[in-house]
Image (cartoon, rainbow, N blue to C red; front, side, top):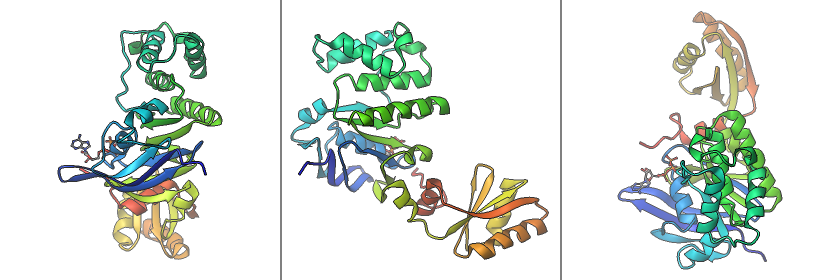
Length: 312
Ligand SMILES: Nc1ncnc2c1ncn2[C@@H]1O[C@H](COP(=O)(O)OP(=O)(O)OP(=O)(O)O)[C@@H](O)[C@H]1O
């Protein structure tokens, strides 16, 4: 039987009193795109560092491409690509020179190297910019160059730590198109993100909070973990509507999602009518209340608590 691309068992790492990664057990198959989702400080970066053999765990173990991340760290590093949050691009070097630099670092053979760089530049739509200094690229283009550099040695597994953080929506879509192309070429992708719309695009996701996996499965399976139903309320003054509903419905969970108020309840039929009644009585104009399918964001709030699970 083929080994999974990534397999970890009870992987743990603490920094003083903080359990950054706490008993992480998961496995990712070849050709899969797996999303690690969680708020800032959840332990995503530490997980990446453990799986990419940059840091050793305190306990537990992990195998990547069939190799142990501690005793066979070099073999792991040869087979993976890693784009960290502070991926080192050289601003004074051109796009092309950055690629050359990483090709040297990874020991990519001279023979066939030029073709490979050309192919990666074209793949990431950077060919027209190959002479431009990396420092003068837009945020989205920098991320694409980072990706191209992480792919220079044809890795089997690609680790991407919040690759689209702070990138505009159009560039994020563009970046994901490239990731899907890579999947077609049978690269396994392990990506962390704080964006839930991106999590929806993964084959499977792990929801991480305070170093632990709170949920693991396809986005559809994770959504089924949601307790209760959601009534979405559209009101003229959503913030005020949220506060009023919070006070009037102490047993329900009330949150603001964009300009909509979500009320989590076990009795959706009653709640639909009740929210309209409560808000109308308080003088807040309501244009509708209806039962909706939970999004991953709803699940996130329901699993992690009202603050979204941020660790200070
Ligand atoms: N080198 C370190 N020394 C001390 N504490 C650390 C170190 N690295 C991480 N931590 C702590 O471990 C916890 C998890 O951090 P980690 O960076 O893995 O989370 P994250 O989910 O990647 O968040 P972010 O997106 O902000 O990087 C945090 O409380 C963080 O402060």
